[in-house]
Image (tube, rainbow, N blue to C red; front, side):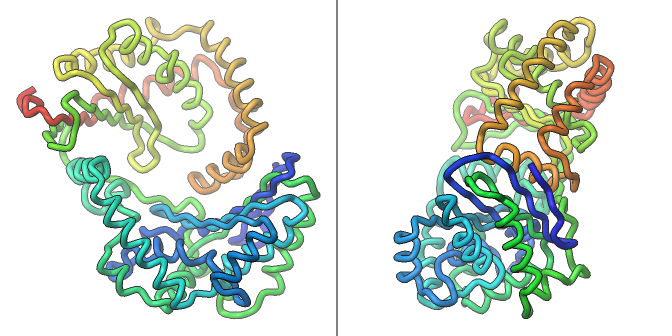
Length: 423
């Protein structure tokens, strides 16, 4: 895995995985829908649909025929904070694919024909997705948990009224805004040829490029940090019962335990997760296998809330006991920690990571995640070295952080049974 900073705000990630398939992804680090003004809500979602639909010299139909003839594939995506374009091809066509995608990413061509077609598709997507029961339940719940301006309340789909008014000049304006505020992260994965050749092609493209778009890329005055983040701020509560007609009759429980989620604790969190939270971890084993109190248990460390998040599915009459067990598991280190299990796990988790390096995108994604979340350059080999140095003391220190966080935890229980309100 190689990392190169082509320019102050252009980052190149390449891996050396030998495959016949070549893939490239170009991400605008802060090009997501979060940065839309009220009158532009949803227009970046629409831009995603249009940006890789043609080139300067090929209209929509011609570009479709070009892709078919050359066996090239193009795509785009939008998230809350970032946006990106991607492509894949046979390794022999890597330069052609890269040339085309760079043009679309930096100097795209928008036209009325494509805009009209994709606008109808996006409006239908907004209507369909926003009407789905699970979607409605999720955002109704987020609105009860977090203040309005929180990351978790943001809907990428946007406002259909604003989308319906979009012009291709709007798309060009928003794209220019993306280039102005974002750093570009370019990832190259697979292919059976020297990545240096493609890397030089990319460097030449940016070095020789002229015009407003390239000026925006090179102007550092309005650039956001590569690890720009949006927090989610909780409303005032410690225990929140929610009755909702779209929920299940059983209880969907959400527990947020405040902890520091940063780059320094990443390796420790990985081991802690395996020891206490995952399938064979202490908490899962006690709640699911020993007591039979939960149907499922999902856990993650959330950057936006700076918390350990637990999502459990259970019966209403088990809520109190589950909370007691969570408190117990994270309040008695000597009882629930096994040094032998830690030593065994350190060997196993290293094997897991080494095996994952065989998977396309695992190496690039690891380095990309560190850049976009923490602004740090570290690949899987760096993580492996850190894992090898994890000690019982490190786990104890983080365990205490979780234990301290329990005093300030947020608990949300959701059901379509009104009895949840009097639990």
